[in-house]
Amino acid sequence: MLEATNELGTVVLEAGGTLTNPDAAIAIAVGLAALGAGYAERGIGSAAVGAMAEDDDLFINGLILTVLPETIVILALVLVFVL
Amino acid sequence: MSAVGSSNPEYVVARVRARRGSLYGDEEYRKLVRMSPAEIARFMEESSYETEINALGSRHAGVDLIEYALNRNLAKQFEGILDWSEGGLYDLIARYLRKFDAWNVKTVIRGIYTDAGQEAVEVDLIRAGEFDDRRIRRLLEADSIDAVIEVLEDTIYGEPLRSAYAEYEETDTLVPLENAIDRAFYERLLANLPGNEPTRQYEAFLKAEVDFRNADNALRLARSGADIDPAAYFIEGGDLFTRDQLARLARNLDELVEYIADSQYADELGPALRELEDANSLIAFEHATDVALLAYGDQLGTIHPVSVTPIISYILAKEREVDNIRAIARGKEAGLPADEIESELVIT
Picture: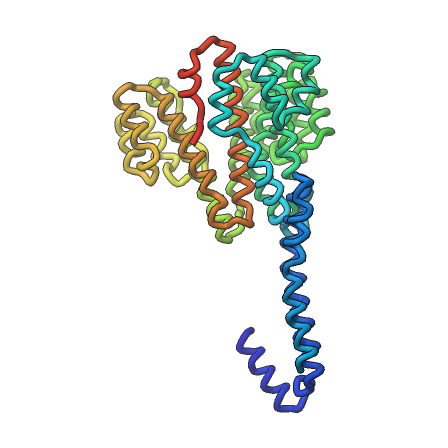
């Protein structure tokens, strides 16, 4: 699958498709970062809720750990202003 | 919850790890060994067994109270784990916890066979398996073994029990029925396990347990010299023995000991085997298999922290805790000295 994405990228770029447009590329980058963050939060969140169910004191720790992957979206968002 | 959908190991592992922290450690056991049964009950009331001791405290006392509180707490915790897990994870955990279903069915059948009262049977049940309260109620209300089989018609035990019933009627002993239940349980235990890496570790543990069970039985038969067909007690699925091997080895104690000493379990069981040869004491061997299983259980879950293995590891540790507290309470009741009780405990 990975080789296929590489080829797909070349095709898209050569044909003058969406990815030659910087705005569209940034939108995709931010979207993919958000997707990754969401997937990471899925696991962390369910573990955090499990831990909180056993011990209420873990609420703050759970909350912090759950939103940590959100930083990757913020980093991706930087691209919007830089480019 | 159910066997549909995807697994949720993160949630269950987080809860189970939190509970693991509240299990008794060496320190607590040392204290418990020096207490009387009433003090043990008091000690339990101040730890995670509070609800159970309070609920049962008015009806029972002494060792009975401890025993029933232990059973009920075990049932509640394991029921909880089954409740939380979904998908493939549920299937893997239910496989192991079905042993409590098997225990319950056996208890009910024995109760009917000996004409014990419904209440006496009820307190001995451990409601940790897959059966829901309604089925257990119907089991308790059944007044003949035929009725019990009818209640279990749509479970994995229905078919084997039905075919063993004829033999039971002929011989009027419970052995065929109990063997049928055990076999139904062990057949399901190792059948169609999915093939990923954490599951293979789980499978290796289950196989070790079957092997040890077989070895225990074979040693016991070989030592007693009784004229019983060892193959009838053979449990399928282990790595160590085949049915024919076990039948042959169980006739000769020396050969059997040598065979186990040469097997893959030599490291764990070696010292106990030497003791068996010297002092002819089976207790040390059974203790050694328990310790080996516990060590194995502790190891589970360190390589794949988010999978079924840490959950199974907790289930084993909890079972061991309940066994240990029960041993302490029973030992105290019988008036054994503290160091003798301590040598009976299975602690790593």
